[in-house]
Amino acid sequence: MMQRRTTLKALSAAAAVAAFGPLPARAQSGPIKVGILHSLSGTMAISETVLKDIALMTIEEINAAGGVLGRKIEPVVVDPASNWPLFAEKARQLLTQDKVAAVFGCWTSVSRKSVLPVFEELNGLLFYPVQYEGEELSKNVFYTGAAPNQQAIPAVEYLMSKDGGSAKRFVLLGTDYVYPRTTNKILRAFLKSKGIPESDIMEEYTPFGHSDYQTIIAKIKQFASAGKKTCVISTINGDSNVPFYKELGNQGLKATDVPVVAFSVGEEELRGVDTKPLVGHLAAWNYFMSIKNPTNDAFIKKWAAYAKAKNIPGHKDKPLTNDPMEATYIGIHMWKQAVEKAKSTETDKVIAAMAGQTFDAPSGFKVKMDERNHHLHKPVFIGEVRADGQFNVVWKTKGPIRAQPWSPFIPGNEKKKDVPEKA
Image 1 (spheres, rainbow, N blue to C red):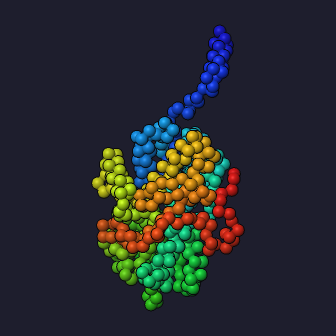
Image 2: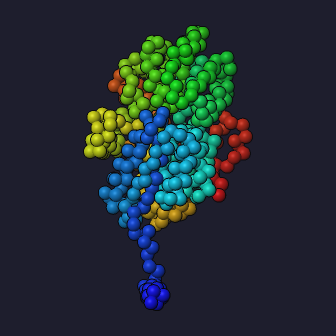
Image 3: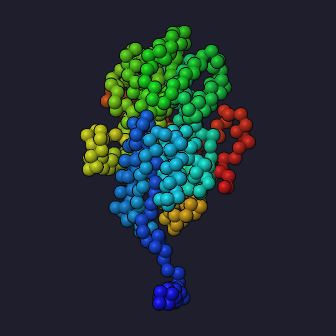
């Protein structure tokens, strides 16, 4: 009897296919799962937790407007806990167990390098929202943060200019991992091309979570006493920024004496710091909260309402936005647009549909996903720290800059193609 019922069901299904065409797959009518892969604990939580929150806000916003292809987005949030091997484990879990269509996440380059083989092996899709060192181009990653020519190089050019103080000596200070070391390798070659001798470059690294900057700042003061205008290029990441900036204030190292330009410090990282002694120090990004335009006003208003409604610590009373939050917001919206263009969440179809996607960004510019190299065309801004922890924009590009994933300051890169190889 059981076999007969099964046979009848099969015949009924076959008849339905013959009469009406293929039955819609159940998965095509349910929610579309996406992964959120950010450290919610450990040394990087200070920077990454808010990216999880802005991702959830963006998903809620898209769902309220009808979702994607008429389906709701369902976020799957995991915590890799600032543990780089755990990032790879969580990425595999999201792709194989949770069956997500895309993942939005990672901050440090070491976490991105950890998950990259997983995404390439399983043909998954990662949207990476933070500035990085370049020297990478994967079919399975869309880089919505800045490449070095969209942040590091313009910042140093500004410092060397008359408006930026005509710097002659440079301290390259970073956390000890791939992003700072590779960025500083590029900057050393750039400075050398500008005639800066090795003797005018100091390079120092500290581990993740480092908290005692007394000795290093004393060394910087000594280095700066040679009589040439000196500046610090900071690629310190995570919660080490709080003791670093506190020690700057303690030792009275003012921006007028030795300006610091940071590549990983924005509004969120300055939240726990007395910024009054830091007025005039700099950061280079592709977005600042203080930028005035209707799109940014609406973005900030949405975030403030969401943070209050969700009772997000810190932000419910003092909502802040920053560059990686904007890049996360852009990435999720561009993914939605690509899925709708492709009429599918299938990885290869979405990758093809991402080429040339545009979005009116809170920065005030229409940003575009490059047709070839999986990077956004982005504007560059340099901001000075204000007493309230916000930034005054002191310099900006006229428009979005096309990314160079392979820096021309790394030997051999001229032979590399500006397009990801097929897997």
